[in-house]
Image (tube, rainbow, N blue to C red; front, top):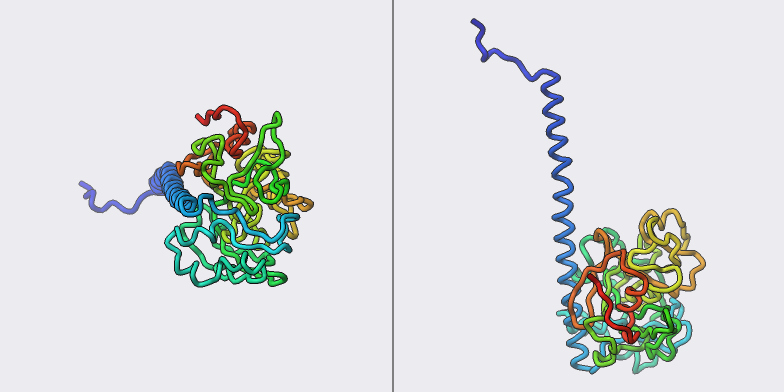
Length: 341
């Protein structure tokens, strides 16, 4: 009688069956792993935004206003890298985010007291701060090479990336007059003031629609090219650390710029712009843009994280209606609170 212990290796058919079973198991496991990663990234992002919201409230408690979206000298043409650009809201918040030593390493207040001739504040720009980026944004590790004027012709480059932007309002912020934050009208002549914009930070009491109904901070994505300024945490410009104009014109809501949304949303102008590449990256742009619009974006599935004026966090779906998106970006539209459920 034959001894079963003499049996040889697997047959080819048996080997193929085993390989097929392993492939099926991997195929079932990968989506689950991806979901866990997405959930972990969203939780980290939520915690980051919560800390930023708390810092904004601490700042407001000290100065009776939220930090200015960006300090600039003059008001015309503020969305222009050739203008004299000063500290933005995140630079001003550094002492409230356990970054006192970094803040003290430069002279932030002197930008205003010197009338823009002292740009030492920009010395913080190339510091990478982990809590300023969402772990889901794979582009956040590539610094921006854009050159910006920080003190009367003192141009600097090498801006580290960030994932969070102040809400400068639903309409283009170059409509704002003297930094008042009262932009142009929106749908049905609704008002459209921002929360933190050019030379302006609202007091919580000036968020007339209610702090729990108005976005204070929204998530953004780092630029897909070094020459794309978007997501540069210390750079107080549209798309870099502020969003505006994200509910007017050809911007229809979060994550515009992809094939299933407006692919030509005229977001930030990029040197050597290529429409196909931009759309494939989910970062719509337009070579002839006036730089008036900058949209909220993320790599989370289906939407973006935001922090409201009361410090609460929320996930906003890409499918939010244009009117509702306008309302939550405006601090003073005067309409009943929109439903986000």
